[in-house]
Amino acid sequence: MKSVRYNLYAVAMVLLALLGGCNGEKKETAENQESRNTADAADKAKAPAANRKKTILFFGNSLTAGYGVEPSQAFPALVGRKAEAAGLTYQVINAGLSGETTAGGKSRISWVLRQPVDVFVLELGANDGLRGIPLDATRRNLQAIMDTVRKKSPQAQIILAGMQIPPNLGADYTREFRELFKDLADENDVELIPFLLEGVGGIPRLNQSDGIHPTPEGHRILADNVWEILEPVLRKQQGTDS
Image 1 (cartoon, rainbow, N blue to C red):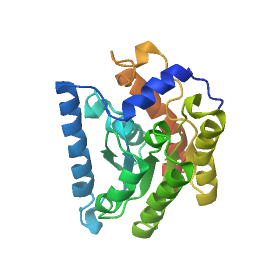
Image 2: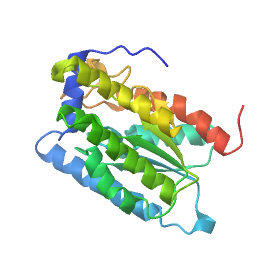
Image 3: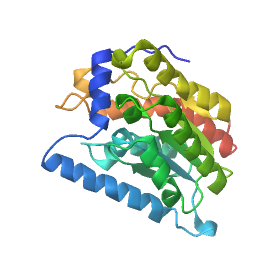
Image 4: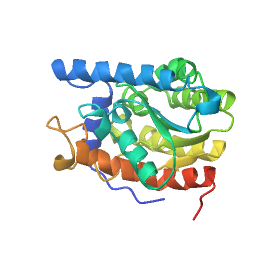
């Protein structure tokens, strides 16, 4: 696992943003886009099985949704372009929603998965940590989401995105929060992205003017973090291991 270096204050600011987002017209626009993301996720999954391209579904909060940037600039879309450039034919579905908690994700996962997917990237949990939600509840919700994916898409490869929180809720909570992602990945035999925000949090030029949401350049780094773990999964699934 790569070592993780980050500024705790910056991570706190990023995570606080996940709870809601910015005010005004920008927020309304982003929320409208995120609603379309969820609707598109369900609609795209309706494609007839015989004609369906393999799919990667990103299921998360405002980071996945690409708050404050164009949909084409958010890391899920960038990952899709990386796959295409690598000769891996996958359709990317962005099911990100700002402010999403693991409980919220558990509630909407069945609706999003109305048809099977091939790769499922799960990016939730940060908002739970900021609210001090008991870690057992977060763990149960993440497990329930993965269980639902496996029930509806038994063939799907699951990738879990790790997250961290600042120590304001105590060292034990902070450590256990960080470790629960690795524990769940190990218990479920799924791949883990150790820390999605590595290399972005706390670097002003990689965040928007609010200091908390990644810029297009920041999203390119997030895409690199995801691609490092995702590429071998896609190549193995399509039988093009190198």
